[in-house]
Amino acid sequence: MSGIMTRVLVVEDETAIQELLTVTLATAGFEVEVAGSAEEALQSINKELPELILIDWMLPGMSGLQLAQQLRSHPRTSELPLIMLTARGNEGDRVAGLDTGADDYITKPFSPRELVARVRAVLRRRMPQHAGDIVVVSGVRLDPTTLSVTIDGNECAINPTEFKLLRLLLSQPGRVFNRNQLLDLVWGDHRYVEERTVDVSIRRLRVAMGPRGDDLIETVRGVGYRFVRKDG
Image 1 (cartoon, helix red, strand yellow):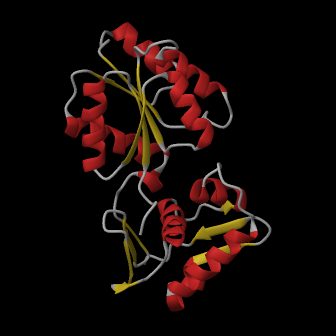
Image 2 (image 1 turned 180 degrees about the vertical axis):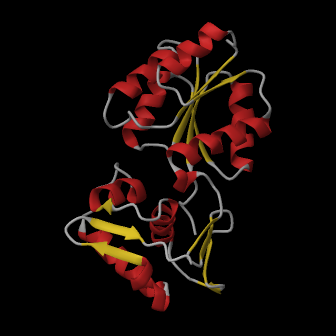
Image 3 (image 1 turned 60 degrees about the vertical axis):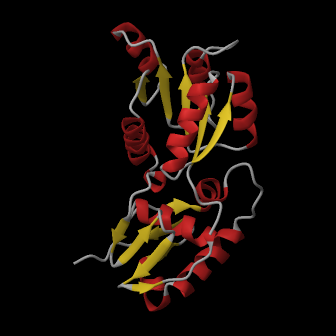
């Protein structure tokens, strides 16, 4: 499968730090894109939303702080997970960074292992379907690392879109996702896809899941779909 990795946008102008972040995050299984300025980052975000943004405070032109404030002020990007990355480590700077709406604040120099752990922690809190954790619910086991799904111990062959759809539904059992939410979170808001595509993919996913598909993925009439927890 391809195109399933969690995408992180790194906004950093120092080449050495860019390379360190790219290697660290790629090794941890993330897809990494690098922007050398806030303006370059905005161009990338306008084309396609990442799942998380790491922003250096000190950037040429628009600062990282200003970029974070701008992203938080627009509906399309207001919920994007943001982590500020900077050498400015005093309390006032940390407070200023968090006051922009940043989800975390990491000071340089940083431990690569700690960086990955904190990226995963923010994703787990804000976008659990992208945290990279193995998820087990009602006999369904989804492993984002190996891109594998088993149901009651039996392998389930699904395509990349169905994998992302199941990963999202499993991340919040019981939550009803409407079709527009599923389109944005699975296909991406940068693509035009008709709502009926969601219904087709749900139907294929249920078939791939075998006898338990219809039981676990419930249609909420007039709204959308949810994964029904059947544990115990």
